[in-house]
Image: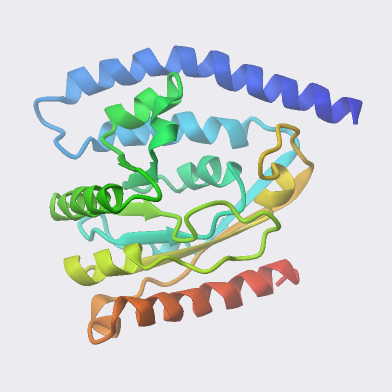
Length: 248
């Protein structure tokens, strides 16, 4: 327990201090690339490097990513959906080096440095629990897709308390239908043990596994309602998660 406390304290101190250094660099990149990088690809790439530091430099976490060959080409915007077990999911997904705009609760944008950088990247906030907030989020997401950006969403809406995949909300699938774009499912396992919901103590997790499943082309679900697309994607992801939890 003492070792966990020491490692966890070092982790959070490192995150705080490094964020204070990284944010001014991000501002500089944003200013320098303003004339030519309308999608903020370079800024997001730097943010991916920043975010991935906290898993790459962590001695008690080990991350394996499978299925990189399933990532669509850079010119194909898609709706990316991942299950949500832990705050660590965000750090792990930054290792994909894939261009996207995060969709995240508005409270996260208020966090010093990290939240400010989310605003700098034009990530998309959502005010949960309000119809107006959902409509604003949907409009912003549609605009981002039209500009050629992919979206990264947690369709469960919040972290699972026990690692079990919760029911999905329909929003991500409505967006894919409206934009006529592919859906890229990603399954994460092991982050609940690495950092539990609401906890600050890091766990020893040598088996964080991220699996990028084959993208579902629009033609495969164009004739379905969002609720039916939701079920189809949930079933595919749940089967993969169950296999990973069994050690497959």
